[in-house]
Amino acid sequence: MNCSPLQTAEEKIKAAEIAFEIDYNNTWEHLFSAIDLNTFSNLSVPKYREHYKSHSTTIEEMTKTQLGYLKLLMKHMDFSVKRWKKILKLSNLLTIDLRKEYFKQLSYELTQMSDEEIIEIKNEIRSLIYRHRYFASSNWSMSENNILEYERLLDKIHINTSEYEYAYLFKNGPDYPLIHPVPYDRELNRNENEKAKEIIIKEKLLEFKNLGYDLSVLAKICTNDPYSTLGSYLAKYWNDGNWDYTTFKLLLGIQVSGQIALDYLRNFNYENYIDYKFIIEDLTNSGYSVDILANIYRIEAFRTKKIPLVTNASELIKKEFWKNYIRCDECNDSWALIECKKYSTLDLYLHQIHQIHYRKPLSAEKIFNCFDEIEKMPHLETDQMTSYYLKQLIRIIQDTYIDDPVKCNRIFHIEIFFMNLLEWEEMKCFHQMIKQSPEILAQLVAGVFKKDHVSIEDKSKEETYFHNMYMIYQKAHFCPAELNGKVDETNFEKWIKKYRELLIENDQESLFTSTLGRLFSFSPLSNDGYEPCKAVREMIEKYGDDEMINSYQVAVFNRRGVFNPSAGKEELKMAEKFKKTAEYLEANYPKTARIFYGLFERYEHDSKRERIDAENGW
Image 1 (cartoon, rainbow, N blue to C red):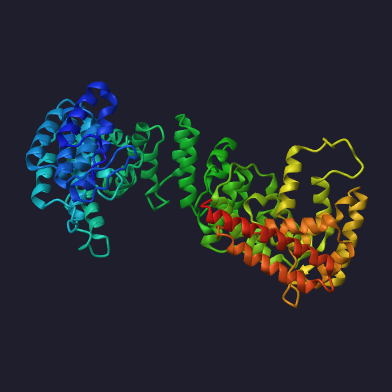
Image 2: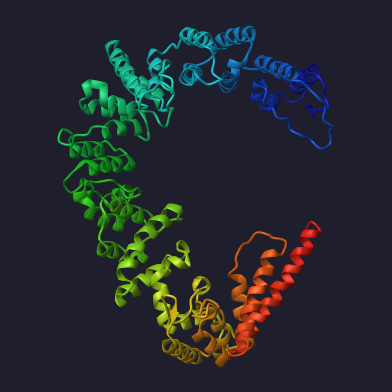
């Protein structure tokens, strides 16, 4: 289908020519984005517009339009590397004549480009050759004859700086540096191409050295690639794979970040032959940055089986060193935990503990001790991984110390500290403590709600304090004295009585029934299969009033959470369930029954409204 007001390919191409005259700078990109690659494979899907009627078109007409656009684009390449790289991705779809024209124009424009720009073009051609040979069995890949055309083009492209011709070897990615890979469907164990890659890099580095080329020139051009593998391969094959401090210093002087030099150092697997102490002293005296020195300390810490040298470094370097977690020998795990806690942030400290634990599981006692005074550590913005590390670690100490009153109390405070990273179900020790101790809930209520007889709001406490107390209060979904799905009536009544006394002491007795109603909604089922349990029913009958009933109903309504519309069917099922519960409880527990009759009426009303909305199409 054709959804454009322009009907023929000629009209569209003419419009594109006019567009270049009106807005030259932006038209190239707009026109390139209008070319649909699927057109060439008969899979194009039109982009519909409501204000134009669609008309029939043909694949031939669409292909003609796209080729016309390509010709226009090639007239306006303007020696742009970015544009040539984009067109290269489409060039295999060109006709033979158009491809020849393309190669001719590219060859000319390359003569006006810098060596750095030519490298980008050559790398794009190499990538294209690799891709089509590696996926030779795919229906979109070029024939070998066409690939050879690109290979011949590649050989004709000359770079004035000889050292630059070797830079492609160290471009990180699966499609470098091979142009004759084993196709993916014939590659055994997926390592044949990797072996071939190693061989060609080794041979080319030897050739580079024998020709007397300048390593600093090669290193400099490789710094344009933030992921260059030059340093790693120099460690393997330069100087017969032997450590050379002169080479290291040369590489270090080329790049501000020192990444290539650090990769070179990092890839030597033997510690004994590298004098890290000398390296650090020499670079310190030469005025190298704290960042460079910290990275060298990290490499040494990873290799050594002794106490890492950073132990004796300045405080400034230690702080820089611990901006990232480190891998070290198992013998230094305890050292790493102590030093990381001293100089790092909370987020990274959790990462460090988890990495050590993942490699060799730490005891529950060791993990528990790691959390000692953790609240005092500085911390950055947390992410999903921080939450993951915390949950993995805290679960171990929760399961081990849930029945230890002292340690359970400590873990409870840790859970509160990390409440924004934990769900309520994951705060196991908080569950344990608050179910047994009404003092905790009374403290939360005192922090969130006003007193009964104070008209002036207390502003002595920080807004953050109120926010935190409210967040904890909102998370606390529990039934007092509940243990393993059962509520002991004696302990339950004692809890309620003590809670009321505490509210009276805090001048908040008016909140007694409303706060309890919310908690009672989280009661487990009774033995008869109905909610709430018998102990809760008794307390509702004893203390129940309109506020308790209302807060219970609101909590039940809120616990449903997010749901999908069902035209009132789900609401009707819930209403019938609440009605059945109310009828069952009415004879012996009339106040409790009122709660469920109210819920029945609410959900029955919602069911009717949802059904009407569905019938009316919302």
